[in-house]
Length: 233
Image (cartoon, rainbow, N blue to C red; front, side, top):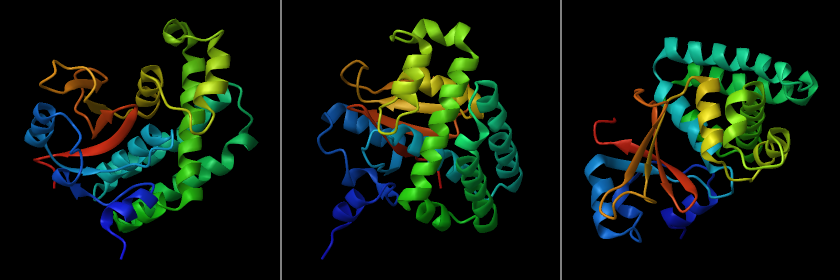
């Protein structure tokens, strides 16, 4: 018989679980801090794409049952193609990915329950196509705003960084990528980090600062999972 933990390991995005079933290896004080603020979590496969997958799933999930917000996000996604064109990407290199992304949002509009969303995100081709598009969008946004972002990138050039670190699948993301993608999609993110903090508590980062986040992520040993606060249904 397959246990839920084994099933989760095969999934790209797991079912929502009580936090107590995970995180047993986290230091006791920080574990208590997590449990005091969050009730559930959803594991994302650790394949180097976890941030992009977590952001995409978590944000779409937060928009379910809100038709107007989903419609606005769909428009944002459609318009994001311009960002790539401005950065010099050939439309043929991203059109299929963008079409698939819009199709996923439309299926969320039609379903509204979240079952379809989880199913789509666990289909490797669909799920990876969304990740690949978000990587290209992040790269385009970084390059289109190079005056700002180039100061934060340790690489021979921003172009090299984008090609090797951002556009390439399975490369872990840096803070600068999170900032760029958050701005590009207008998505606010709250990150609770096990790394850092004062040894007793988590470190908290909201991007952009002062925003009301649409999703909460747990950062632990270069990996992102989705968190659900106690007030979340």
